[in-house]
Image 1 (cartoon, rainbow, N blue to C red):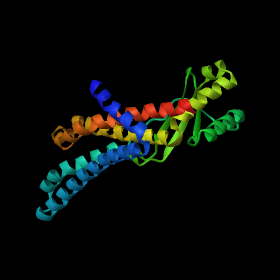
Image 2: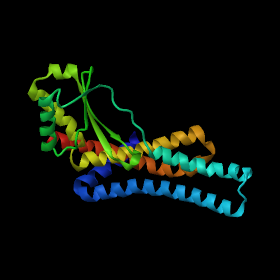
Image 3: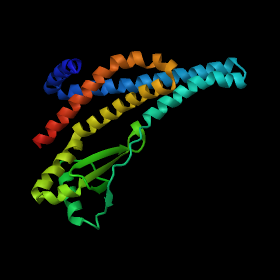
Image 4: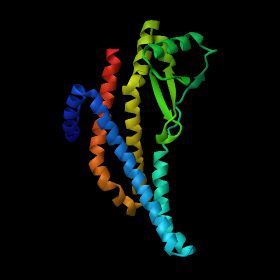
Length: 235
């Protein structure tokens, strides 16, 4: 935690002084993670191609090539993040036109993303969940989950404030940028978990890089959340 704080402090000062350059710097850091994963995949596929050019395709070749091909599959599966849909009953615009009008009004006022699904739950809470349809490659679907007890307890003005707060998390550049950073971070966590569970001998391909990379990625993810929250509060 101390190490994370020591990284966030200078980053926060840099972000305040030069926000555009800070976003570029974080974007390049995130892109470095993609480049490294792509490099690993290309090296493994090149190893497969070279092996096939020197070894006859037989049962022994299949056993040899299974290791790099399995690692390629591991990386690709980790990039294809699957997030379950939140619990709740699906609500349609026909069932609650006034609520959908309010959601649309708040979303447009905050330059927020489109809300694709509205769910009603039995929790005293409200939240927005983003689910990528193509893993790290995006196409996000946004789920607004509204707790019925919360909806009943708040006045229209209070509920509007809560709704604005939730939509604000994803509004503008800060919200989209934060979501991207967190999806990349989750992919790396998934890769290391699967390497440790399925392919212990492959850890040398990822662990040295992630030991250097992870602290910076975690600091950027944390700071992006802080900046997004501040942006929401100031709106």
